[in-house]
Length: 325
Image 1 (cartoon, rainbow, N blue to C red):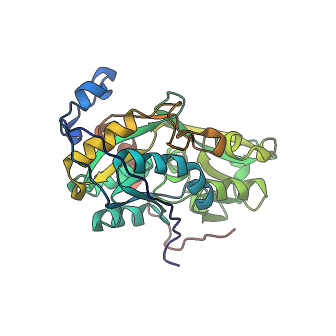
Image 2: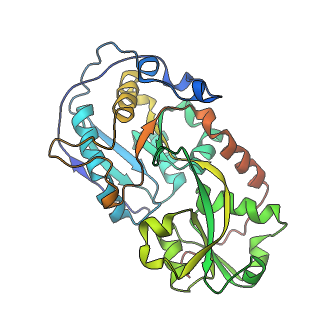
């Protein structure tokens, strides 16, 4: 199949909204500039209900797609209720597919990992989409990538000649930042390791390390503890990357400025207590949802990731990509 798609269709409608400043022009810099208040980001006039139009919410597969469908179900239901549209949840196969589908109008709302969004900015995503918000976890706007290894490996040098797994080339913690660690140490991973795999999701990478199919892999710091507790004790973190911003949420410009403002307003008002009409917590970590809320930055917030992307830009891996260890 060209893609792996999980679709969640929820038909719930209500009308609410507001209009305001151009969210693509929000300033970046110190916290006072980067963080915007609801009042100055979302000064409003009445927005017409977008009623009845289906909206596709696309995301890249950082976990098992079925798990992602389950953990995002309350959020998708809530967006359907608050935006007054039918929201469908789609897991694309990789970053480039999400970018292309957003550009072609197949996807109207998209969640990009930091690395994917940095690539998208370099590729001109702002021409056809508008940044609206970023995710946070427990009040933190950053996380780190991690190189995890089987317990028997104590140093980076002990991995020489072994097998290694990345997630995919659009991933910050699953490829770009770990690759920069290798390059900064003068290591070409394709020469250092006996084989390199691209496994498509963090879950697949962790499972490969836990099972011993590969000696080491790249994922995000804390994934093992939060999502695969059975792996605790069988793997360890060997190295951590620099700080990486959390995901960026964008909306197609085809949906119009009022829709973008309405989405921004809806996301920024979600708290840990927010529930759907049928009583489900929108941000429910018990079902694996990884974030604790949404905040408004600007595309410039992802500048450090773009710099890392440019650092590794001249590194050209072999064309062949292995997907099964």
